[in-house]
Length: 612
View 1 (tube, one colour):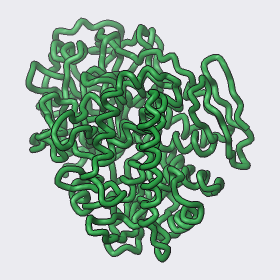
View 2 (cartoon, rainbow, N blue to C red):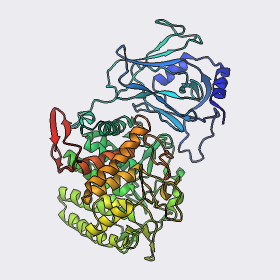
View 3 (cartoon, rainbow, N blue to C red):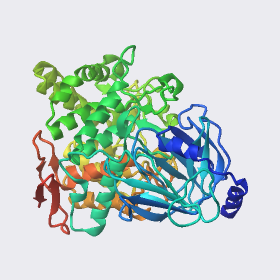
View 4 (cartoon, rainbow, N blue to C red):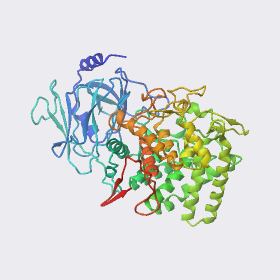
């Protein structure tokens, strides 16, 4: 790979002049999706077409600085300079969203829609891109970077924002220079801003009195808000943008449930609707909710490696629907999605998908986990999938009861209870864990995996089993100072840099924390949740990876992983605060505050609530 100074010289040597028309194309909202490798080369499209679609770059231009102003005032409160590793790729998504993103580590990501007056000022060590014509992109900035702009807040629609791009080293033809300084340039465009939500709970109003905890909670809330987008496919959360340019079904639904706890009900409802819009409506997979929804309308399921197959999204969709109703008290959504609910339950209760009382997966048509290679090994009834299916059946029973179909509700309650009993067949007293899966012949496959945290977090294990799982996962072969490994270091297949074979997931750590609260291990739950908070605070503002090495707190997954923040928020609300939606305007609380937190202050619109 080229050294940073070599990249800089390469960028300078290009000496391409900026065409003002190309900038205005983007500023008027042109769509773009592009990639530049860290060495300055241009990658070829992904054969699957999942990640690298749209317009491509082939020019480099240098600017000296970047500045953003709001109503003539510098946005110092919304921006901060941060450090980056110089070897990263740059991606840009120009769709119908409204957020700015960038990441430390291997990639820099930007996603926003410009509809008003926007000010963007580029530093010498930051790369940026503008469309040129209809088939290629222009890169502005050197092809390496260390510093970059970070937004800390969302702008409201109607606020005046101004773009100022300046350079001391070159002149621009075609631009009308204003102000002082050689080549100073003002560009008018449009900033979509973020809709002013009528939220019940303002994220910034959540205070524990502990500076680090409040900062981490604020970053979680901020990430959830800023990574939401109104893209061309609908309102949703884009997951892990350095790798994924689509909505991941399960991640989106976790975000939906976290949004409920922040009072962002409209976003939650939109996300539920987006996933339902891509539900399979015929064939042997009728009722299946998609594993992913791409930003590219040409990317149909048959072109995706997963073919939309997912064993997790369908049960999570049912749970997210019930969660929305419980927290918002909005029962009108049930009428809107009654047909989707019926199809989802047809899929989840189909006898041909069961081995005894357990829901089984077939890797050829229903995948478990990511990457796909891991899924192919997990034929049969998998522990985390069955936990989510049980939860979905129970939640669906509540929804059908609300719809007045008590007979269907009773049937689902009974089936869920029977499945809970069968789930205990996974438990191995010798290992202190639930086995990974039971195949179609009834054989148990023991893997020292952390997936037992899913039924643990849902509180569906008997107390003695739940306590045993908590203690086992707290062992040094599973738990690290920065979180829970996905697989024990004692397992023969342990690999600290593989997602399912030993990497530390903030998501799993948050679920473990919630499980500790479910079974009365409040201090251990607080300690575990703080591991996630420390990752948020140690990696740079609002940065959290989907996974970290099992041997050191080094990020190995996509950055800005909003689902990790979503689960951390849920663990705090549901575990620490003991919050639960009850269809009322304000949730009920049964708090389990740590000794160092005397009270948590929440702001619901113009009301303040103190939880002690």
